[in-house]
Image 1 (cartoon, each protein chain N blue to C red):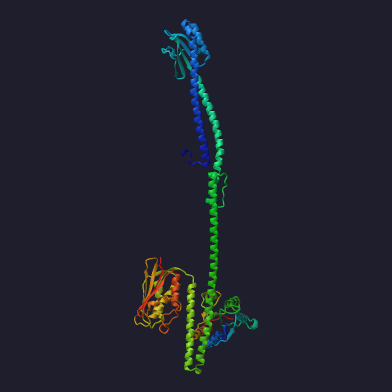
Image 2 (image 1 turned 135 degrees about the vertical axis):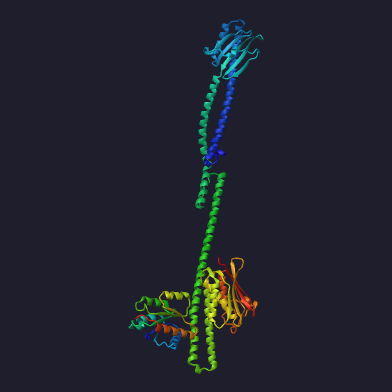
Length: 488
Length: 145
């Protein structure tokens, strides 16, 4: 139905109604018209034939008695039939018209001059807007003459015209009626559909799932609307569930965040307390031991003085431990500030500082140029200070101490950095203990340390999303590797 | 040399004694006034309470102020000092165990002149005290009282 394409549903429905009623009406009218034309023509013919029969019969005696006047009178009887325009009686022996009749004195049509059919049967022919009837007049089975009638079809045409006009009027009337009815009927179908469309539009444009379309009838459209409403209800309830879950999640996150903030605060208070309060008694122990050693040295024998020295060494070591622990805690707490950093530059600074702090040592430090990574520069400096400081420390017993800092892409988005030394190394079976706080693989008398440096390093690397691992061999040296995101 | 006193605000008896020892070991001759909490320190500085009637034109050459104190904290004391015309310019050295970065920045924000961490090692402490005393009592030019 290309005709209806692009129209609204309402128009479509009225269009369909009107088209179908129009088609029905037109075809019915045409049918009636054709039927009427046919029957009225048959009636007309029958009428004229009857006239011809009567006039033919009445003309027998005038023909037999050759009474033209009587024949003309008989013909004049045709005046009662207004359709007959002209008529002629001819004699069987020929010789022009025996009697003639024409309405209103109009001239005889040319057909009467034609030779009439010689058969004894009546014949007729519709020719243009006239009917020609030829009726042999027979007396005792012998033709005595013929009657020729010319009837005009004006009446038939008039009737057809009237019929068509009437048909058109009826058509127009019923068409208007059909429009009115289809309007009403269409409304019962289109209204719920239009409401449904309206509802769907409001859902899609305003995301308002509380919309409901009223169900007016339990037909297919009613079912459709009911299903639509059901669907909305389900979406609404699912949305409510989702909203509920989201709110719940938000509450949980909020609660966790508060817990975390509280825990963080506690940790901060704790480390503050450690930093401040734990050190004060240490200072007292160390300070008063020193006072004893300086002011009362004379009253202490060598052993007593040695013990006091041990007390002082203990407190100083504990002070160092507290400092390192605080450093570790600070590293965990600190906010990461990521940026592109020049690892080579930091490593070179650390090397320079190690050299200036230990001028007596000769260590060859090789830092590969152009090493870069993504990370927190201060925290990365702590990593390098610890790892290079360790390498420095553990090569202290070698004459040809060498430390190198290298980096290579690991194929993905990370860069592997390696700090290599030829120092004391370690046994690989203890490799998993390296990064635990207070874990040490060497005795203090060999190499000093608190065992917190590598734990701090690991924490920093992990906080950057990297990995750290070490390889070593006793007496041959160690390699500490860690990954950081490559600088873009 | 200036004979104005040094005010030490410290609640820990050990630390008071150690600081006294360290200052005398460092040959700092200025008299040492000790306040054991923030309120006492303010009483001394502003001549109120136990120090009612003290001539407040005579302000310490330097105040050694601990952060963690009972009653008023070191930061509170510092804030009051900076808010008062008489002590607005008195040099204040925060002398504390804490190395918390927030403590350091807070005290500088409130107008501390220096921040010194008390070392555990007594010898280092003496060194620090000597340098402190030398700087604040000899080299530094304090504002006129």
